[in-house]
Image (spheres, rainbow, N blue to C red):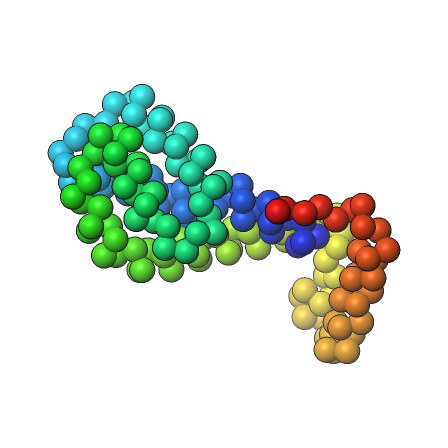
Length: 154
C-alpha cells in the first residue's frame, strides 16, 4: 500500500512546501509594504499548487520558486535574500510536515483496506527480521508475477 500512496502524496500533497511558499509570499508582501488583493492571493495559491507539483523533489529549489513568485506577483525581489538565509531551518519543518502527512495517508489507506496487522501495530505481537524479510520477498514476488499492477511514475 505504501508503494502506491507515498508517490502520490509526494507529488500531490507536499503540505510543507505549499505552506512555506505561501508564507514566503506573505513575507515578501509585508517586507515590501505591498497590499495583496484577493485576486493576487488566489493567484498565489494557484501558482503555489502548480509549482509544488513540479518542484517537490528539487533540492535547494526554494530560491528559484521564491524569485518566480516575487516577480509574478510584483513583490520586492530584495527580500528573497532574507528567505534564503533561513531556508535551511524552514526546510526541516517542511520535511517534517511532508513525511508525517504522507505517513498518515499511507496508514489511513492501509487501515481502510485491512492491510495493518493490529497485533504488531499495538505491540501485542513481535515480528522477527526473518519474518519481515519473508513478507517483503512474498510481496516482491507478487509484484513480479503481476507487472500490469505496477505503474511507472517516470
